Length: 206
Image (cartoon, rainbow, N blue to C red; front, side, top):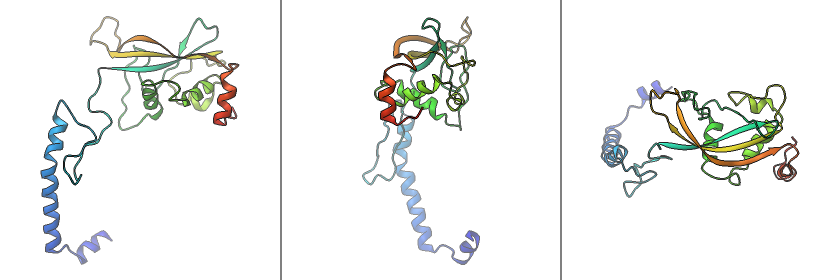
């Protein structure tokens, strides 16, 4: 149909002139955004002309050299803790970073944003903990491991770490260097009083 339409209704001379003129205007207006893209001081989400024809968009203008990450851990005694690994986000410093593109690991990505704030701003992280306390198959299918395959742990906590890439060829063979910032969520058990209010607020059956 497109081919027939092109054959039966070829563009007029006026349409060709208008299209060429528009292309020239877009190219000319794209010079400033392109120079901004190559600049070390990028301006994001900005317009470069009064008509807002050609603009810049992006959540991040630069890639940081360090990042905070939430690590969920489980324990049966409150002393020995085992970490849950996610498929793509940083966790075990010895584990090589995953190749993401063009796949978008939404949960890994969302937890990174949660690490920039507090649990009060991201209450859905409590749902993760509730599911881990029950070895929920759906939740575990989103993880890279299950450190408690026999039965769910008694406690789950969330620790906040600061990650940096390790130097190439380091003696330990690590991909990341990390330091503990502190607890992001304290240890929570199934019997914790927080769940009664949380389940009512979110309408969780389980």
